[in-house]
Image 1 (tube, one colour):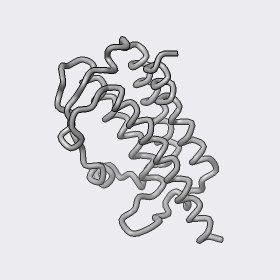
Image 2: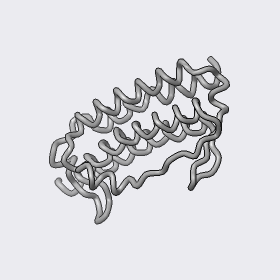
Image 3: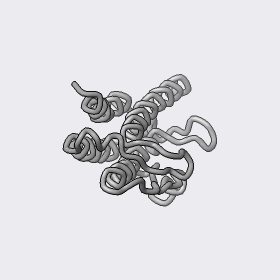
Image 4: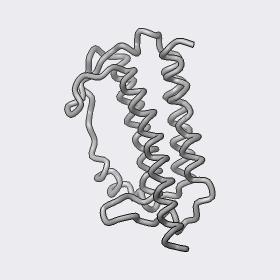
Length: 159
């Protein structure tokens, strides 16, 4: 399997980690705020779904255009504006799963040399499509781990 195909396969698997992290979560658990200013499980799940929209735009822009400037976004403003804490985790998981599959299919159809194309992120500098695919893969995995830790904290407090 070529490197970019392996990268796509890892990218495609992120919803499984989120589903595992969310399995059996109660509504109370998903609304637990682990510390002031920290996101709830609901907010993290909704963030992942919305970030997948951003991922799709960034990846498409980089593949189609020559070294585009990649837009940044304020994740906390999005969470507030779109009421992330009011969104059911099952709905967020379904959106994330669908959007990730669409993005993975798009990447699967791209030629291998597309993964070397670059974009300029105002905060992170020059990154390739492969760099971004790796970042978005790890982003999903990190948030799945974060959800697991929040649920463990909830269980220790709820007794």
